[in-house]
Structures are given as structure tokens and as C-alpha cells.
Length: 243
Image (cartoon, rainbow, N blue to C red; front, side, top):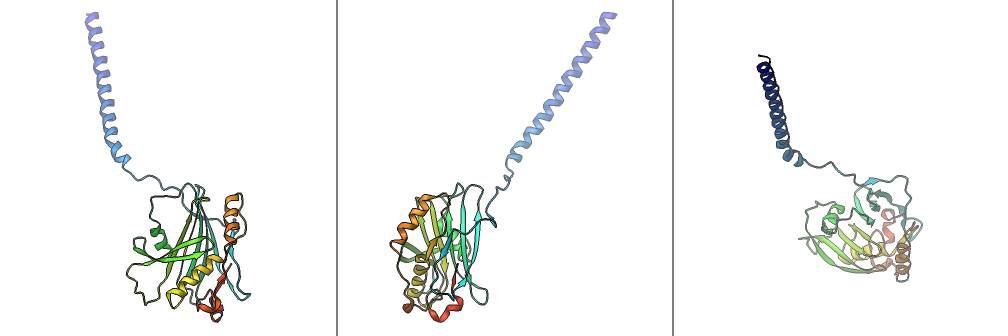
């Protein structure tokens, strides 16, 4: 009788043990069934660009005369090493009329991203707005490509975007200008802006200092008499801007 009771007790424990294993297996399978859904969740947003209030300006525009108005200057930094120095000018009605951005690329730079997409955003257009080339201008940094929205009437004044990328050091100069009554005037305004761009400090980047030193040897003067643009013409000194 004692042996029978012992066998029954052992079987009861065995059944309970197997039942517990089955329960754990069911719970594990249920958890695994949720994994694909969890893996499909969007990853946490990575830190992006932020304003660097404590950083000092690294660039400036040389002044044509003492009446020029100071532009707004914003510095943005990225956790992966990128830095953007952005100068902006606005009209008396506080409408954006020009922007100049010097982007020192870091690990965040995406070589597969179309450059026209970011330029369209700078110009106040949608990222999907198609742009077309509007020629080249010669500057102290070499040829610079100009862009405008596709379908722009050649006889209608429109903002012109521009872009110049340098491989070594990894540097991108871009922006736009909305001033000028003619295409030649707008082209001249952008060329003058870039020729007046100077380096205040290179930090720990000797190649950046070398780039600007070589560019200064090719600097050209601005054709003040040949353009009515706000950056060039004396008649619109109240709208001109420089750092």
C-alpha cells in the first residue's frame, strides 16, 4: 500500500511538473509572437541639429561701406560633428530676402540625399519642389551652380539658389537671394556675397584656413555700378546686410 501511495504521489508531481513546463512553453510562444510587432516599431528619434548659443561666429562678410546692416547669425551643431553657420537677411517687412549657409560636414552627412532637396527647403519651398540649374557664376571659390524652381518664367524675377561643395575639407556653401530685377543682377548679387565671405577663425581645421587663403588670391570686386541689387546698389543701403 505504501508503495502504491508513493507511485501515485510521484505521478502527481510529474504531471504537475509537465503542466508547468507546458504553461511556460505557451507563455514563451505568446511572447515570441509579439516580437515581430515590437521589431516593427519605429526606432527612437536620434538627436538632430540644435542651436549652439555659446559658439562664436566663424565667418563674416566684408563690408562695402559703414551703412550696412548686420545680418542675423545662427550656429547649429549636430552630435555627429556637423556645424552650420547661417546668415540671414530680411526686408523692412521682415520677409526673407537672402540666406548664406556654410556647412562643415560631420558623420551625419548623407551622400545619398539629393542636394536640391535641402536647397529647396532653404529657399522656403517644399522639400519635394523640383529645381533646375540656372547657370554658373565664377567666384573666388571657383564655379558655383545656380538653381531655380522648374517652370520659372525667364522674364519674371525669382529667388535664385546656389550651391558649392568642397571635398577637402568637407564643406558646403549654399543659400539663396531673392533680390534683383533681372537675372544678371541676381547672379551678380550672389557672386558678390560669396566673394565677400571671409573666415574669422578656423578652430582646429588647418585645411579650412588653407581653403580660404587660396580663395582670397582669386577674390574679385563687386560691380557696384552695374547692379541695382540690395547687396550691391548704393540706393538700397537700408536693405543691405553683412555680419
